[in-house]
Image (cartoon, rainbow, N blue to C red; front, side, top):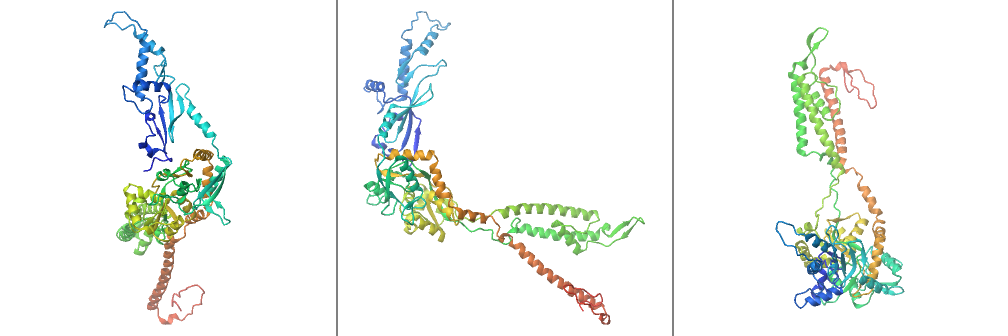
Amino acid sequence: MSMCGVLYHYTVMHSDLVTVDLENPKYHRIEDCNITAIALNDVDAAKIARIRAELSAAFPLPPRGLLTQTAIWLDTLRLVVAATKDLRDESPRRCDMSWRGGDAVRRAFFETRLDGFSGPVFWSNSGERANYSLHIYRRKNSLRKFAEWNSRTREITSAEATTHVANQSQKLTLEGKHLKVTVYLEAPFVMLTPNGTYDGYCIDLLHKISKILKFTFTIRKVRDNAYGSKEPNGKWNGMVGELQRGDADLAVASLTISYSRSEVIDFTVPYMHLGISILFKKPRMTDSDWFKFMDPLSYEVWLLTFGSYCIVSIALWIISKISPYEQFRLDESTGQYGPVPNQFSLRNSFWFTVCSLMQQGSELCPRAVSTRFLTAIWWFFALILISSYTANLAAVMTTRRMETPIENADDLAAQTKIKYGTLGRGSTMSFFNESKIETYERMWQLMSSQPALFVSSSKEGIARVKSSDYAYLMESSMLEYAVERDCELMQIGGLLDQKGYGIGLPKGSPYRELISTAILRLQEKTELTELKEKWWKDKSIVCEQAKRKDDQDDGESIGGIFIILVVGLVLTTVLIIWELLLTRQSIRRTTPPEECDVPMPPEIFTFQINPQCPFE
C-alpha cells in the first residue's frame, strides 16, 4: 500500500518502541516515515546506561534502554527495600489481631522518594504515582527525544536534544542562495504564458516560499517532459532523474509523493492532499420525452383509470334509468309525484364523470340516493388519484435523471465497452502496476495489454474522454480543475487512494526541513487554501452559467400537452363540421323544399342556421 513514506505520520503508544534499533537495515522501508513515540523512561539517561552494564551479563536486554516493565520492576524492588529497611517490629503475631505495623509500612511507602529508572518515584495522598514524566520521541531519520510531558504541571517542554538540533538547524539558511528549479507543465500547477514566463499554483507557492526563506531561483522546464519513473535500466527519468543527477535543486510541480520516489529523492511535507479518481463525460439527460407528464402514473394505472371512467359513466346512466327517484319528483303544490326528464343520458353521464375527475363544475346534479352514492365514491376515487398524480408530477419534473453506465471503479473493470487508461508515465500508472487489489489488478492487465489506452498528457486524456467512450484515470486535483472548466465532464465515484503532492529535493538535501517549515507556515495562515481557491474556483464562470441553464425547463418534458391541445383543437373542428352536416341532413329530410325560399343574410365569422332551410 506504500504507506511508509514521508506522507504518513504514525503515533505509537507502546512505550517500548524506543528500545528498538530502528537504524537496523531490516527497517529500511520506514526510513522516511514520520513516527512519534511515548516512553516512561529516558532511554538515553546515564543511570539507564549504568544498570544496563550491570544487567547485561545476566539478562538479555533490548538494543537500547530498558523495557518499561523491567524499569518498573526494578523501581518497585528499590522502593520496597528503601521503605522497609528501617522498620522494626518485635511484637508477636496473632491471627485474631491486625498487625500494628501496617500503618507504619503504609506511611513509609508514601514518604519514601527515589530517583528510579522509570523517573521520580513517589506517591500522592490518593495513592497514585505523582510527578512522573512521559518522554516524547520523534523519528524522521532517527528516533530522538524532543519533548517531555510532566504529570504535575501537565505541560510539554522541549528537551535539550531538540533544542540542540534546533540550534544546529538555525545555522542552516537559504538566504541569498540561488536555486535551480525544474517544473512540469500541467494546468493549473505550472503553465507557460504567451510572453514566455511561468504562472500557476506551484509558481505562486514557490514565490511565497522564496519570500519566507529569502532565496532566488531560476525555472526551467523538465527536458523529457515527465514527472519521473524508473526505467528498465534502473535509471530514473523526468524531474526525479534531474534531481538525482544534480541537474536541479528543486522539483516544483504536481509531483506525487510515493515510496519508490522517496528512495532516490527527498520530499517536503505535502502541500496538497489528493487521490486517483475517474474522469468521464456527462451523459445526456433522459427527460427529453415530450410525454413525461404521464410518468407519474404507469401505463397500467392510466388504462385502469380510463376503464374506471367508462364503467362509472355507464353505471351512472343505467342506475339513473332504473331509479324511480331520477324519473319522478314530488310536486310540492299538489303533493303528488310527477314524471320529470332524466338528466343523466349516456352523453351527460360521461360528461358529468369527466368533470368530476378533472375537478371542474357541472350543471348536472343527481337526485336519487343510489346515484349520489355512486357519485361520492367516484369523487373520492378522483381525489386520491389527482392528489397522487400531482405529488409525483412535481418530483418527476424537478428531477433530471441521467443514465450513467459506470458508478465506480468496479463497474469500470467489469465491462469492456468503455475503455480506460492513465498517463503513460507517472505515479497513477505505477499505482495500478503495483496494486494488489483484485479490481485494480484486472484494470492494469487490460491497460498493459493495450498500450494505446495510455496517453502522453492529461490534455490528451481529457480530449479523448470528450470524443469517445473513454474514462481517464487521473489525480483528483487536476480532475477538479478540468470539471470546473468544462461542463461536459464529471467525476465518477470517489478516490481510489490517498496521497499528496510535495516539492522534490535531491536525496539528503539540507534544505528539506527549511522548505517544509515554510509550507507548514503557509498552511497555518490558510494561504495554501487561498491559492487553491484562486486557481480552481475563480475561473469557473462558464460552468456556473451552464449549471443555471440546466435548472430551467426547456419545454421538452411538457411538450406533449401542447400536442394534445393541438390535436384537441383539430378534433373539435372536425366534430363541429360533423355536427353541422348531420343537422343539415336531418332537417332537409323533414322540411318541404318550398319552405326553403327565404334567403339568410350573410354573417362574417358566424354560422347561423335557418330553422326552415339550414345552410342557404
